[in-house]
Image 1 (cartoon, rainbow, N blue to C red):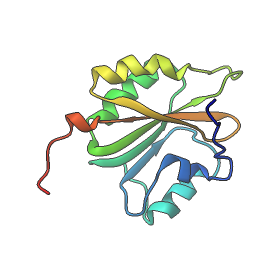
Image 2: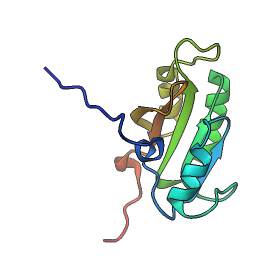
Image 3: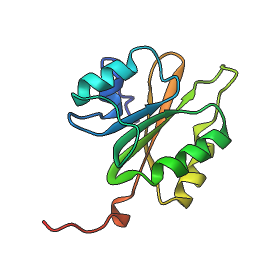
Image 4: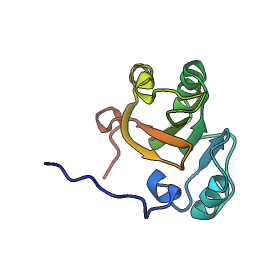
Length: 138
């Protein structure tokens, strides 16, 4: 029987995998304090253009999510990540995150992690599969 892991002791920034010096953009109502905590973790301000190591985007509908996948896929570095944040079950704007997976796959992205952000929001992470990343010199 598989053991369930407890990540409740980790902060949202730790769950999201935000690292120092990364170029990160955040859009939407991602929750109180998350913007501040991400800025503190990266040690710089958030970015609004250019290549990204990461993007954290709250979406309220499937159409908004599709548009965000297209927009941020074009800016993601090969080792980057796109966290699509949605409202949890029970909220008027609840969106089943699994509906986004086929759209992401069409763009060359795969989902590889989900996490709870807070009591009202959760996220699903999309990345470029290693097999599709360009080979870099060792």
